[in-house]
Figure 1 (cartoon, rainbow, N blue to C red):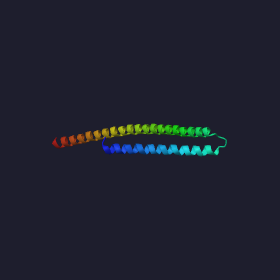
Figure 2: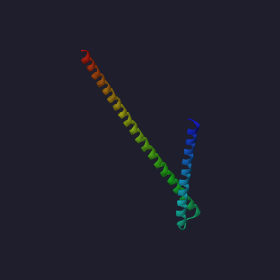
Figure 3: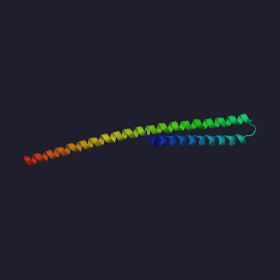
Figure 4: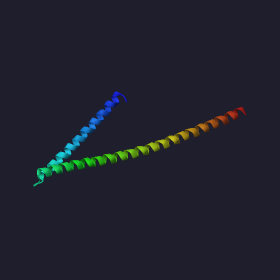
Length: 114
C-alpha cells in the first residue's frame, strides 16, 4: 500500500469519525430538548434520558450498519457467483466456436485436397 492509498484511507476514517460524532451530538441535542420539555424531572433523570437515548441511537446505528454490511456481502457473493457462471459460459461458447471453426477448416482442406 503506497502513501496515497494510506492517506485516502486515513481521510475516509476521519470522515467516518466526524460523521459519527455529528450524529451522536445531534442525538444528544434531541434528547436534551425532549428532557427540557418534560416537567418535574431532576437533573439526574434528564441526564439519564439523554444517555439512554444516545446509547439507543448508537445501538440502532450499529444494527443498521451490520445489516447493510451483511446485505452488501450477500450481494457481492451473488454477483461473484453470477460473474463466474457467465465467464464459464463464455469460455465454453468460445471453445465450441473454435472447435466448429477447426472442423469446418479441416473439412474444407480435405475437400480441396481430396
